[in-house]
Length: 314
Image (cartoon, rainbow, N blue to C red):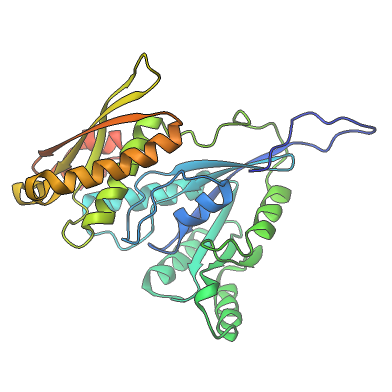
């Protein structure tokens, strides 16, 4: 991550500092979390091949020249069917409404599927100031003519302020996108200290990492009715951290799946999450996981508050 100071030496007036909130809006699995992580240069958001994994608008922070870019990685926008779904979609549009710049991310390989079409209709109906169109996963497309056709199709409906073709996975096109954002966010002081990467509390980030590991190992067996809470975080005298987390599921059968035969699965999840957490906090981590059944946690307002979501009424 390139860094710049807020003061400038040399002759003449320094260039103004800039700072802006950038909302990344798109359908599930369009690559939003991967894009934010690539632009920020470190891991701040849960990345999973399973859809609907980002639940709270994570703010990743990047420095580009004298500009600070604060990314709001919104939950994927899709057709909500449950109360939790509605809360996630509301959070996504709330993040877009609060932002200075909106990036509309579309999976170029999928084109305008039903979810992407729904997002375009919402942008059309709200008269949202012109978003920046970002076509992602262009490396998967053999026929580059399809990119032009997709750009024209979207441009007829929302008149994007700019169009970028990128691959969040291999990094192509990201430097140009970052430079454009840096030049187009509003002038003003930076909102965050220079070395802050995310304002998501470490406890919540730790829970997200464990939740990602659960999806990684159990994406076939487990539905989305799983949540992780960090219940204890203690700094020990030897410089290490002791973390306790509770994994909540809705049924005993799901608890058995997470535990695995003889506790093998929970050990695998714990070891994988512990390794990543140690790298992030840059010290040894002792991670203790507990699995509990909580019937119908998806209807409990307190769980929503802990995830940073508004509890939607029926």
